[in-house]
Length: 260
Ligand code: PXP
View 1 (tube, protein in one colour):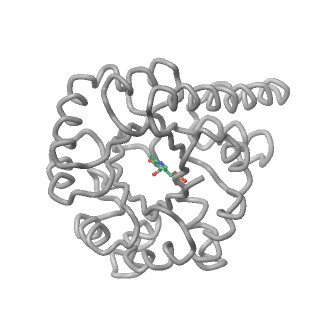
View 2 (cartoon, helix red, strand yellow; view 1 turned 180 degrees about the vertical axis):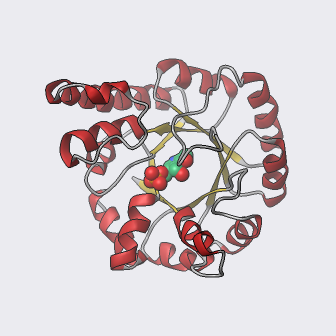
């Protein structure tokens, strides 16, 4: 199981004071030393964390492949085509959201996606679609001709938190979370089984499968056990732990849970 470390939250801390530190660029060698496989960053339209200069420096200096998440926004895609990261993960974006709350609607955006995918391919950039785990989404992704899909694991993570960590539903959008424990357990099992079935189907269709969002040291194991998911992209929980343990140890702890 490969691990992509999302380092946006280092820039969140910096942007809170609009100063120079901490600089996400300083994370690159540490992430590599800890044995992670990929650097993931999100260049948001509102530039709330990663700035254009960060993206440029990170892509230029990273010793690991860079997976750049971005919205289907022409201004951002122009920058992306110039920067030529190893991979682009197309994600939905809303200005008012705290974090990416769901997968990309690849059906209503199909026309725009077709044009964007063609353009990114011309720039020899690998493409991933961040999607909710549904059969329709998997089959449509294959039709759109991308190399990767990334399953949004937010629902799994939220249900897990309600059941085992009593952390509450941070997004307030999932009505299932008002259900009794027994039903939540069933939903969690269904969610894992769904991810397992769909990742297997996606692999048979020739897609490579990643997953991410809300994964942490408590809930990652069941997702890591799905052999057909090749890669996890994890940010918040690793950067949060790094405040206390240092980044290298936080990544090593996660890798241990992934069986490495
Ligand atoms: N993958 C994608 C496509 C994301 O948008 C995010 C959140 O930025 C992540 C993974 C990582 O999520 P988290 O920070 O909750 O680990």
